[in-house]
Length: 487
Image 1 (cartoon, rainbow, N blue to C red):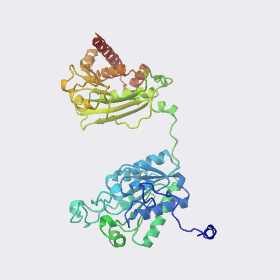
Image 2: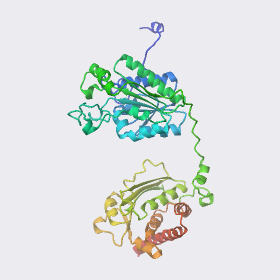
Image 3: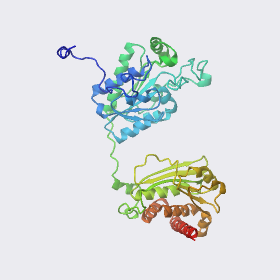
Image 4: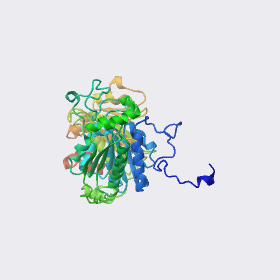
């Protein structure tokens, strides 16, 4: 067709501009999605894209897609995209909406995701009335992982985990999530729609647009449940699967508006702005004179990049040691992270924490290859000793370092830190003696930052004074050990 002839025609139907021009998930077939033939996700995608385009909100939309068949939605929608862990999309959507209240945030979830592992997230997001829109695609099965029963699987429906059909006695009844959420006071609009025929699809399109528009108007939480065919896992043809939605699923999940409070709701008040950095100390009850006036300069040579693993029993002050180190790094103007990990027993159970302190942005709070291991007991030493980076340090709370734990490629400081703390007045201060040794070895944090962090975290004056002495004692013990080595 010539350009002149093309200009005589008006394009009235084309792919939505909300979709990318090509889909680059894989090198070939970049005009296709990954969905199976007859899958309802493609239809729902089209309806959602149409709503976004018609409302003119493409540049302000954020789509949250968790694990499930829709896991690759970010390859198709040309909007802001955030990938969420399985079931956590409502929590991620809450964070996105609260941090960017003028954005339109849409959580797109399947039934295995929303009604199973994510049931707590969706329940509490709805109960809080978060101003988000949730698209809930219900095909009554776990599709992506091979066809296990979901909370939405119908009575009598066969799956890989219910080969004889779901029974109320063994697996319970199907969860009607729309009805469940509609019992809450906060949701503004909940509707169940289907993809069983063209009439149902037309109604579904209008419902999705309304749910998104409710958010644009600031009315609060909306959810659209979409009964969707899954020909591959159901082992049906595309036509039969569509009919099964209409003729079978609808008997368990009746279509229609479950709750609509749009006429009674006023736009939600805009969230208050987050406090400024200068207001944070007052909110935390910290006096300004407790903090260095400006970030203290690091006196560590080269790049500051501490990967510290602190491990011991619960009650040994493992977490506090890590907190002081992280807080001091923060006061020094560095990037920090502190991640605790402990067993079911608060006392005498295993306990450890990950601490990162760096001049550069921190990619992950996990410390899998520490350059400092602070082992407060022998079980912790044996658990983490081999993970220490070559050239790193092991600071061990013991008179003698076990021979079968010795390595030629790491530095070791093994002392009875508990006895050293006991000599100062209380054996429970061993954690601070060990921290003092670590600080002396690393040389990365100024004493003013350590003092300020300790003052904030230790409220007892007696313990603050004891911990200060313990830190100094740890530094002395390391220096003394170096003199012995030199001799």
